[in-house]
Image (cartoon, rainbow, N blue to C red; front, side, top):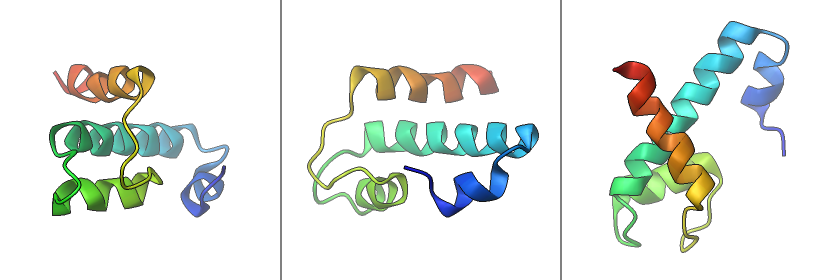
Length: 72
């Protein structure tokens, strides 16, 4: 599903990379604040389009770890 941000950055490689990195960072934050009552985690879930009680997939976790490796 494309978001407005996806559409706005389509074809602009630098903007697409930045958006990908932001999503990875939000997923990394969510990984550490997954509790249903976590205001941080719930805000990240809403932004990422992940349901309130959905588990992160192994793929999402590996992708999130790339945000930390990329910044090292």
